[in-house]
Image (tube, rainbow, N blue to C red; front, side, top):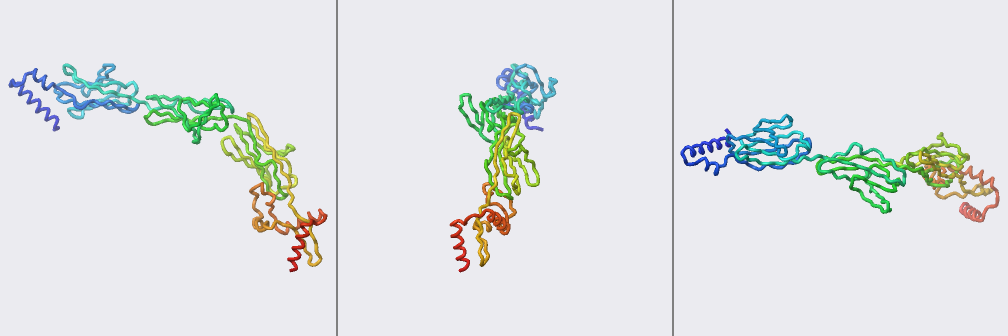
Length: 418
């Protein structure tokens, strides 16, 4: 048997004896003992919408009195003792022991907020009140999000409306973590990683503003929510050749390169100056590499350059906004050599060669060209092929041997016969 029950029974017996023996009048009893009394005060509670709210009411010395639950603003009786009088199905009352009464409200909504009274039917009535505060986590309206298309130089207005209670705070961030640049109509720029407010307005947008933006809504009650808005800036193609003049000897590999910026994405191609399209083949390869959302790197790679390859080239790009072209000329670069000087005894042919050329390149004659600025030294041939080609070139050229070569020959012969 519970201790509280025993205490109440002892208390009841003592009071009954005192009243029957005349030691205590009914008026004295009401003045000094006062009947039912509340234990701890009811607490105000805050509940997230959709969860359960629980009010607890402790009443001692209840006797023959009853406990009722009342919604203060409507004065409606919700329950008496543990019997629920409404048909909502979301209310229930539990009586855990003789003194404790608990009201359960399931799936609370904003309409459930307000004051709830635990009332005892004494005369006068005794009651205590607790307030239910219902909060609603933030939510973003369904029409927020998607893509916003703006021409370069125009004004972009990104909107993000959120609901909840308390009213959510909205912030904007870039998905890539870069600063947001807001240009005012007066030309003043503001930069920040985070901008507050439901509307993010940017004047005179540029291609660097293009990207994904997150609007994040929070009100202190989790979870925070976010929505992705993609800002797309449209502009015609602009082309930047890496080099406008490229030289290469016949038989070597060469690479031409252009950088294209365009939005929407452009159709790009290579052509010769006479208008003929350059199509991929056994010796020719084209590449396109996306550097970011609006930049593409174009490459034209020609292996074993032939005489017909020396020409002007254009890299061209076209989209729905406009078109553009960039130009590069590929010219033949001659390997420098001297006329051979022939001797009778012994028969010797002398050439002026780069001193470290063979040591640096002979073991790597099949490696592809990596840098167009060094293509004049990148011809990969062995010594025999090089000498044969130089003999033919020098023999056809004729002319007098320069003083510089003469000195070189004298030095060479001196060292040879010493």
